[in-house]
Picture 1: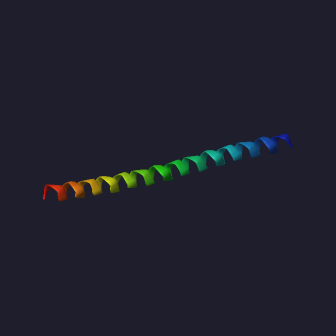
Picture 2: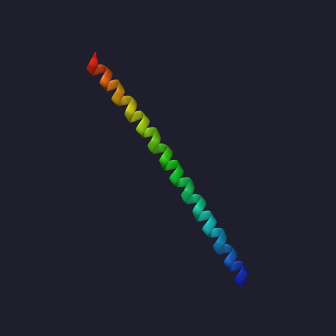
Picture 3: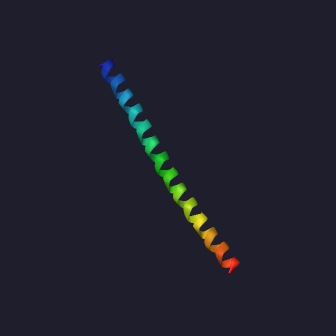
Amino acid sequence: MLTVLWLSVAVGLVGTALFTTGAVSRRMSEHAQAMRQLEELEQESGERRAS
């Protein structure tokens, strides 16, 4: 019975690690996309000022 408990803890830890890795990866991708959009807006704004 103790073996089953330890296995469930191990599976839980792996699941937590995978979930955290996925969540951080998704948030970083969203951040990178937002930064690209910001840079595009800044470039467009700069082009309008130069015109």
